[in-house]
Image (cartoon, rainbow, N blue to C red; front, side, top):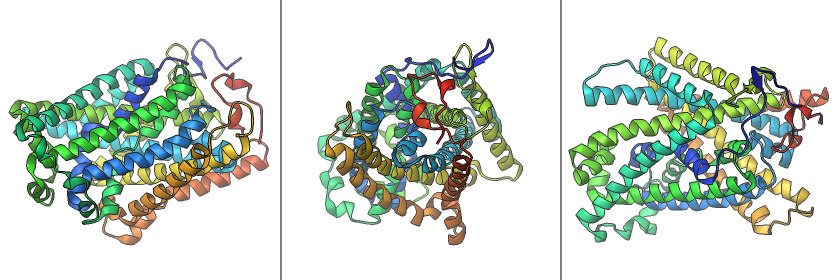
Length: 493
């Protein structure tokens, strides 16, 4: 029997998330409104200008290719360890252990970024809308308590909250897009945005890289595999739905902004101090002043939704890695009633608040310094994990595809993962080579060190895994699956 008593268990709640809620959860992590308003202007300014809609389409296609192999493997693996488990099963447990440490740090840093930015935006909008002056760290503290409680009481309540937030985000974007069509006519949606001339202008590689960053979080469908209903069907469906949905939202919203402002004014605003209000301007000019206030409110909801999703992901990685014997076992405890990984959640929010108060104590800006640093490091980690997953998919199916119940086609097991691997490798290079734009730091040597932090963590993780394997204590994560009692895992690498 699993380790349980009246106070805690070690299991997540099984079969409570269906396809649409799971998709909504990971789409909320991508923060459609926040990413559209925050990242798309950077493509206009620093990437390839009005080709932003085309960039989103191309990245969407690349990630669908990644999803082909990723979801094929998810039909055979249902484990909250997600990338950690996939890599262990595809290319070895030592590399899986290294990937696990990278995943734990990456997703926790992503959550720290959300906490800093969430508090910053809440304080800024409270000041703008109501004239209330509240320090950003106090806003972060209040929101942290809300985030923790939503996670503590189980995944179901959090999913419902995320679905409400996502509906609000998409509603304001859809209303704006429709208003642009009504006010400016369909002819204002110039096909120049999808021309090769526009795509090759400026810095297309950087434009693609910024577009890719907007999709971060879609891959987390597998993290919730143990809590999904019929995970072998739910995870693939939710993954494809999430990629296609956010791709359409990002691309059409970027196109609508150009249609509303015109190519020249779009680029002029992007290259001025008005870059941060491009989408707010589009909303107000097409829907009226009232919509600007709604936009601000929904923008906060977008930030909080992304934060909650990141918190759920990072706490489940802590839980799964502890269950695999790579972190203190106490982190694998779940609430006896709500089945939430409450110990991991406590550790996660404690880590986030520690970084927040260090940033406050040293006077670091929550957005341009602390948030930028955490997000940049996290993004590199997640990109490296996705690269390893592409290799793991190929290795996994080479070993198993002749067995009963497998027999996936060569496109899913080899061709699509290879194309995704090449594309993601190029994107990783583009992000690292332009790392200063993400961190705001001008020192090239320091940027390179920061960019390599996740690689250093991975090397340390590999050494730890190799040591545990030599001692016979490296747990075989292939035996930790949805259908099995996790305390009965006894296979040692």
